[in-house]
Length: 186
Figure 1 (spheres, helix red, strand yellow):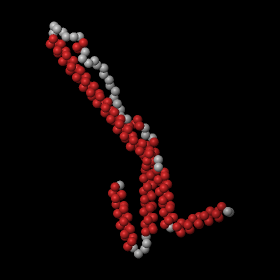
Figure 2 (cartoon, one colour):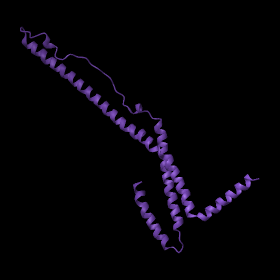
Figure 3 (cartoon, one colour):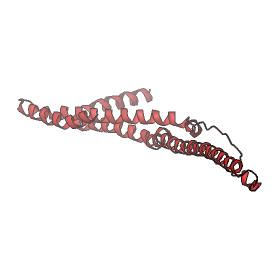
Figure 4 (cartoon, helix red, strand yellow):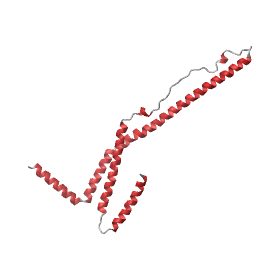
């Protein structure tokens, strides 16, 4: 699309120079062709935007949310020191404390990983909101004016035809009006 946008003005300039070299004046027809192609492109883009808006109306935000696993654990921290120090066997007491520190450390690792997964779920929820906005909200907003853009394009084509060939347009519509008048007055 970027190449087309960049090359179109160059193409129009080259064609204009080429038409300037011809013996006949084709600029009126060429101008009409440019306007028709431009309006047609606008109409196609408006149609595509409107189609996306129709599809966006049917999408629910919940379909963008990630599935979260819920698992909870309940544990006490440092329960071994509640009983006090065993003076008869202080080494066993120290070993119990070391074992309890290992258990609490393992539990902290589980809690840490659970917290990480919770944060990942929150990040996924934020990313889901962004994807929802891109896929639903923006097309809804952009598609709201697609009918007006389409109508403006069609009116541009009609107006360009009238400006390009006013005598022929008048002649055609004068004949149509005469035929309608004759048909209604029968």
